[in-house]
Image (tube, rainbow, N blue to C red; front, side, top):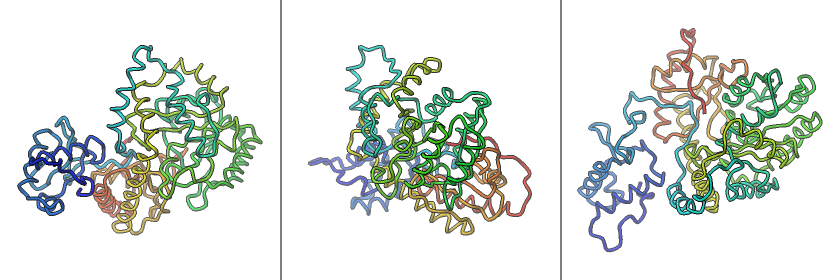
Length: 469
């Protein structure tokens, strides 16, 4: 807290409590103190900031009056919503629900300044009709620039802005596959993609992905020959849920197989910017760089910046983008202009926001692995180099039973079966590290208790349907 506040005193000011309250408010509005963050005790904070406890109390009183801080006897104080509405789902009590079904971090630091800059830039667009089917050119240019930096030369005409990566996936799926067509997918894979394939009345064809050895290129080649899929879907960078990253040699071999079969591939790069051990520009080239016109890459700002922006994109050949634009009119008429301006500002900050996001995710990854080693020592996992989740192997096939029991202990998790084409994966559980570290520790403690209660016990109920993100 002291490090975040830095030099919080206003030069020459004698209103220490007001200065401190203003500094905390700025941290909240800038996203560096997420809603639900538990604050230190007054005496501890006073010692860290080298001020009186009276000053700390006065600052907290002002923050409570403004609705930025909520307190309860015995539970301490925590960050609430600026409007004073609070968030019951994250109150620091022992009975609230901790959601581990969604790998969704809060807004990245720097969002509020980007909103302010976008507000000024919006004036230049108010004389237009607001329909941007392809997307704002300034945003498309900055997305294209990032692809070029990573080794996939791209211009703005090869990019279309969408309402998130899932929207992008559905758009491409609708255009390239129809009822009865086969779609090659990894097993395990992202559940919402399987839902979309089913909704299109297409048939998912799974190819096993080994958490230890990675992609089975020989198996993929066999599936391409035997099933003749109309389309393929891969998450090559920090795969959801396993966290694996495909090496350059495997990308080349996979692309050769897909090109030989003339099978278009959707490459999901939603998590590519969350490289926790380096800059993605220094990693292997994008899979799309090996695929030529058969590669259709989708991306998103949801994990890298904030899901609330609801923006994603498609990178493909100009011909494919043209076809997607023509087909889009049947679904929607474009993405919001203001949010596109905000994202354009975030992508032009020299990488500061992404660097901060990676640091946060790295600390949370280490916190989650530490909690699992302490509370669930029998669970095994490979620490991923990036992404937002651990893919944990359980000591016995109990993922569904554990999901049922965990709900009774105040933790919501998605069983491993949600990530499989035909269920199964009962020895596996995905655990995201997108919540504050204290919430992760508490969640794992509860999971350990739930796991002990279901070990060697037959299932008695099915888990409720949860939204997996």
